[in-house]
Length: 177
Image (cartoon, rainbow, N blue to C red; front, side):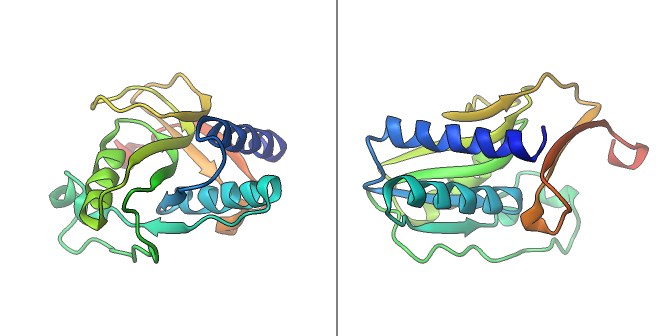
């Protein structure tokens, strides 16, 4: 996927969000660190462009909610969750870059529930690579890619300091297995 394709996909996904929810009233966006944060900001801008309205947008770190915390080290790098608005009775659009096993999304939902009681949680992902370990599916999918467990999907974003946007499928290196 190149930069232009990503822009078109995010625009389509945003229109799907607005259509399913009959506009943006009562919607909030929460991006999962790191890629989901940049993507939720882009979706927020598109919503503003289409509707003329700003919707609350927040950032979530799920590190302490991971079920593999003991495997990633004794001193994991925890970043801020920044949600400066109530999620009670709101439709929370949870945004991430890649949906794989479902474990990140499960952790994010646990973290959201600790912050309040949303009316509904919907999931938007740029890439769904399949191979789920938990029964989780996305409401909005940019692109589905057939992968194997020996592969990695890298989402490259200008917002993260990269030269241009893109998505690359690659084989895992020995250290990543």
